[in-house]
Length: 227
Image (cartoon, rainbow, N blue to C red):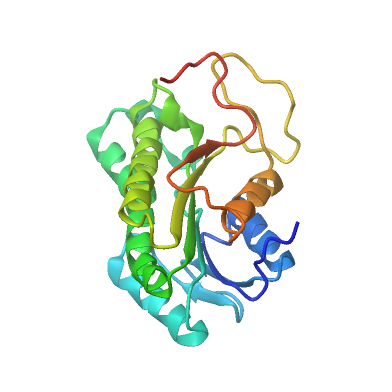
C-alpha cells in the first residue's frame, strides 16, 4: 500500500528516543521529509525544542515552517520515561503535576503551535504516543499523565473536525525489542518500537481518516471492559 507520504513534511518531537527514532526512520522510508525535534538539535534535519517552554516550541515550529513551508505530519513521543517517576511519590501532587506537564501539556503546547497551520492548509495528521496506564489504577502519576494526554487529543480532534486535520493517540503497553505474543491478565500486550512506528506511520498517512481515537497497540488491558 502506498501511504502517500512521499515529500510530506513530518515533525517528530522526541525523535531521538527509542520510539521516536523508529517513527522517524519509518516515515523516512515512506519518503517523508522528517525533522526531528529534541532538546538539542543534532544533524541537518533537526531542530531544538523544549516542550516545557511555549517560547521554545513556538520558535522551533516557526523554524520548520520557514524552512519547509508546512508541517503535514506531527508526531509527539516526547515525555519523561516512566522509569524516571518515583513510585513512592505516585500520589504526590508535585510529581503528578510535573508528570502531566511533561507529557500531556508538552503535547498540547506543540499541537497548539502546529494545528493552525495545518488547518490553514486544509490537511494534517497529528499522532501522540501515550500509554495503557491511562486505563489502569494503582499509580496516580502514570494514570493521570496518560489519561490527560488522551483527553487533550480527543478535544483537539473534535475542535478540528471537518478541517482535513486528524488527531489520534497510540497507547502501547510494555515496549520491548522482542515482544511476547502472550498477554497477562490485568496487562496490555507487548509491542516493539517498530510495531508502534508502523501504526503511527499509518495514522500519519493521508490514507487514514481515523480521528479522535485512542488506539491500543498489541492488546488492550486483558480482562478490562470499558463501556
